[in-house]
Image (cartoon, rainbow, N blue to C red):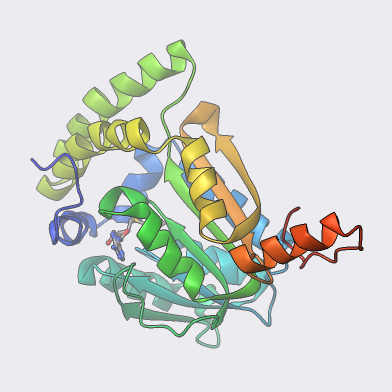
Length: 274
Ligand SMILES: C[S@@+](CC[C@H](N)C(=O)[O-])C[C@H]1O[C@@H](n2cnc3c(N)ncnc32)[C@H](O)[C@@H]1O
């Protein structure tokens, strides 16, 4: 078993194998919490101005759960991108049954985060979920995600998290090491693999990428107003920010400092910080 999860082709195989019955299994195995995290992300997007005129890119869209929730809550249009044909197949079936697809407001396309086939500054918002654990360089992937958002646009994601408190962490360990693999095996071979993989993979990710480091990475990628919520006793993380209106270049910072030294008023670009 590749507990790292970032080997090329690994995630495609894992999710193709789990695409059948994905939504039901995910809801059961997360004790219904998955849906709450999705709602929190969609709410953050709405608060940031995503509305019926917005074009949103939902990366790692899977079965289009976030894409459908975005449309239902804000009326926006969504392009859902995923690298798993199996997950996109289930997403298509969901959309056929879902009023959220009225007017074809969700379009699905095969694609890989880090090599997004979209122009710079071309969408109003980017959402993604459970993605960073499957890429070799989360910071580089984030840079590509931020690249396609217009200045001022929303960027936000959902990820699992390890509960910080000792009691909840012990229960989380039991859940991920015993319940997930056992329940997965009862459903299918693909879900057994997911069930065995998730717990160690999530812990490994946070041993390198704490919430603080993720927050810093958001800042380094050009995002401002970065905020996050730990959900469900720390079992889930929702983080978001806004692309700065204007990149704060080393040159402009130096110029501002020179003006300050001359005691002249300095007008900072929106989103830039002193
Ligand atoms: C847990 S599922 C996402 C589920 C969905 N967004 C939701 O909220 O229900 C994670 C998805 O990430 C996709 N994925 C993983 N690595 C990816 C990458 N580098 N590029 C695009 N999709 C990726 C997988 O194929 C899978 O569908």
